Image (cartoon, rainbow, N blue to C red; front, side, top):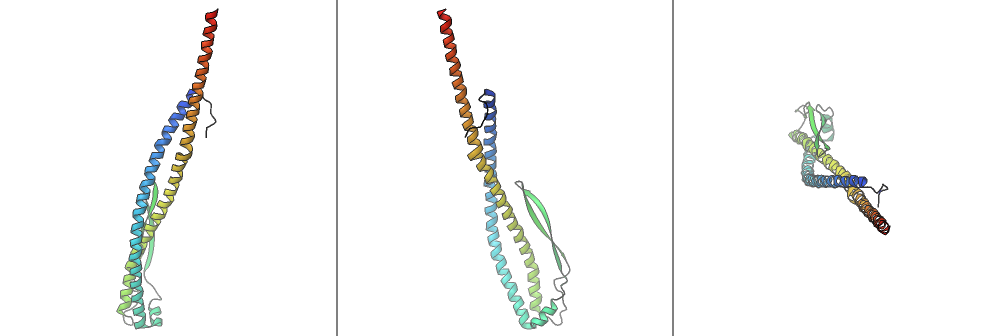
Length: 206
């Protein structure tokens, strides 16, 4: 594809500068895409291992709650947990990773996870709640990691579209236009040279 511009030396110089900038931009974007991909693949491996860890932790917590319920009974257990005293909130801060704003989740806690007296409850329920309290940290960490993977994937997609636009559209168009103008200018030069030679012949004859 050739751009619709005048075939002049000035335009040719402008196009050569544009294609040089486009190639440099393409290289930078390609390097960025490769680094983002490396970061994402590394994070995916961490997410997989973290998920396995969470599944094991969660199964262990469920087992502890089941044991506590078998000791206390369902009604007694529900009554003990009916007035929770612990509050957990998550603050979100961001940091920049190759122009991508990556969230960092920070847990803010108030109150105690044990929200009942010890007279009519079991040690197994205490153990289950303490494990669940620790489990929240792992869960928040996983959420942060998965959000990072999602944002990196989105940025990789955007970068890939820009790389493809430069590689398969803009740069080839600029190069084709440069070739066309170069040929056109050479053709004009040959035509001018031919006319000049004819003029010289006419002058010699007279």
